[in-house]
Amino acid sequence: MTAYNDDIARLNDLKHAAGQPWAAINPEYAARMRAQNQFKTGLDIARYTAAIMRKDMDDYDLDAGNYTQSLGCWHGFIAQQKMIAIKKHHGTTDKRYLYLSGWMIAALRSEFGPLPDQSMHEKTSVPDLIEEIYTFLRQADARELGHLFTQLDSAREAGDSVAAQRIQNEINNYQTHIVPIIADIDAGFGNEEATYLLAKRMIEAGACAIQLENQVSDAKQCGHQDGKVTVPHEEFLAKIRAVRYAFLELGVEDGVIVARTDSLGAGLTQKIATSTQDGDIGDQYNRFLELDPVTDATTLEHGDIALKIAGKLQRTTTLPNGLFKFRDNTGEDRCVLDCITSLENGADLLWIETSTPSVAQIGGMVSRIRERVPNAKLVYNNSPSFNWTLNFRQQVFDAWEEEGRDLTAYERANLMAAGYDDSELAQAADDRVRSFQRDAAREAGVFHHLITLPTYHTAALSTDNLAKGYFGDEGMLAYVAGVQRREIREQLACVKHQDMAGSNMGDDHKSYFSGEAALKAGGKDNTMNQFG
Image 1: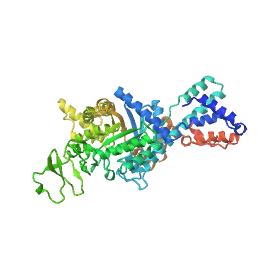
Image 2: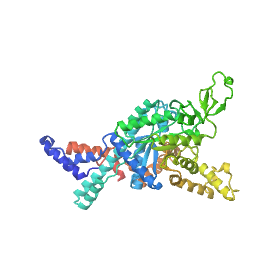
Image 3: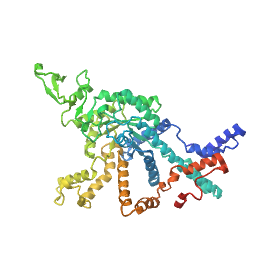
Image 4: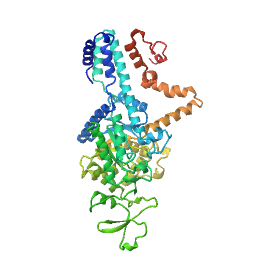
């Protein structure tokens, strides 16, 4: 941000040059409004945040302890409150991002109502949410800076030059709430041209990182559900190139592409890959198909499809819906090939969708990928689709069993039971959950950890708790004790909801525009004054 006093001086020069028509313009007020609106366009944001991500990726390469994190969000207000909370509790937004989840857009933002994660929602809702998030984050900047300007005026009025200088330094060194968003484009919502067009809209809205998956666009499924169908590599690479061209066209030259593979849990493909020579990428893809040798071509029946692979004629397994089946237990090999191919053809980061949160499994695949691409890095979904409690209790149980420990007090199939919550095993499992992100960053190449749907679940949980008490015996106490009093005790900015919605900023602007004639909302009769 330009130094506050320097900006005032420049605006003062402009005022003098304009003469009498600008006599009522206060250069300091204009400087304040500029400071409160540091980012003028989404492209400003995309360029700024892309540089942050690139620096963070370099930092991670030097030290895996420099991993990054984000939480998924489905509304600008939710994103705003996350970043306000991060600044309040941790003092900095460094290495904290936001994730925009296609699942939550489908479930919560579609005009069709709640939808499953199958790319049936309006594609324009993705860039619309990116723009909404950054609008709320910019408003958080404006609100917080507005409070600093009020404190600066008070210090000046009190003649406290030391406090005034301290506050001015805070203004000059202000850290914005604007952080990178990793934005989910699903499988591109169509062909490569459709992917390019949507990517442009997302970048123009502010996205510096776009996550693209290798499923068939019109058969897309949630990564944690069955029925996933992947595409041959060339089709996926064409979409990666489409996203890169979108970044380059818009001048976001260091934009980040996250290539996601769903191959680990996908047993089907829609197409046989094009192959022109033995061992090319199409041939490698086709070799994973479930194939039966054909020793006599006359045995082929009507509708059979056969390929010549490794010099031999082989019949595909074609399902009634026209899809082709992969051989069992080839998921990890396909995953590794997907990742290497994506990184060698323009992707910057990887996303491997797994069925359980296992550092050993992720690390094993990353180790194989790094044999070809030494600086390969992952974005990893710490998904609410995993039963984290059960998975990690079972991991501890298995480790202890291998060590020969006495496990007669535990039943592996029933470890989710509440009766185990205070057990030694449960505590050991929780310790593993606590260190999971650090361990995966160090041992499995995970640069960025995210939770896709956290606020979907927190909104449901908090609403359930309020409804239970409010409509029961507690009545109004359920809100007062369970919500408002906690907001006050924990110093949540939202307890002053009028201020959070921009009322005080509006009063400031009215003062700038109308002077003493301004009709303000924040007078003595404003009930927000009860909160001090």
